[in-house]
Image (tube, rainbow, N blue to C red; front, side):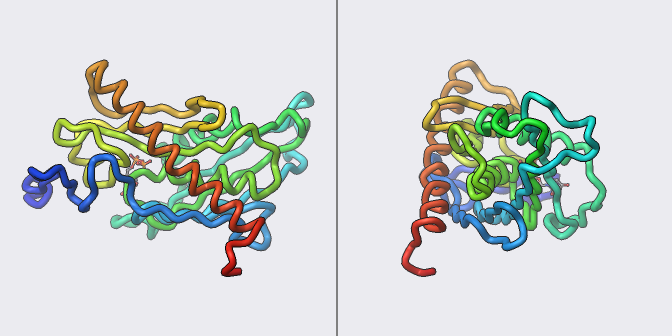
Length: 244
Ligand code: UDP
């Protein structure tokens, strides 16, 4: 660990974090639906310094055909980091981490999407991480939900996602990259606020049972904040926000 990280103050005596936020504050979030003309649905999210674009194709025929399911549609998710999205050039070939995150996002979206309405078809979700700064899986999952809704795919609810974590012995909302690396725990959560169901919960770090409960509670509250912005992105596109 370099000297800068070793001396970085994660939480000061006034309860202010390294990027100036309070413990229960998210980074600045903006979401836009329908940003690509050639995809069936799309969304763009800025979540702090994360910048992520999602494009959807489908429902459409599955190739190769033997991958299709006669009873339901299938969801395919590709989470991909651009080589320029991180400070050390990322190898464009899919890494184990990208394969894992693709699977995690797919499984977090599946309970929300009514795939049973489209047997034998596939819905493809292409996620491009243009700039990463900690929390890309949550930001990508939130944007993917909006993009699926923008594609007109019937959904039970939107999946909103946000991480909580433990930094300087304190439970905080929306862990940034520095906090992820120097903090004590990181808990990404995906949540369907209307159905009150968690579809993603991971934990990197060690928490007591009380801290665990608090982390879930704080993370779910973060998801509710994201949910309002997801709905706003969709209403802005379909009912106009006065600026388009
Ligand atoms: N990261 C990086 N290089 C990589 C992968 C990740 O610099 O090859 C950074 C990036 O900022 C990412 C952060 O590490 O957001 C945390 O990664 P993690 O695997 O915890 O996933 P995330 O928090 O983005 O969902």
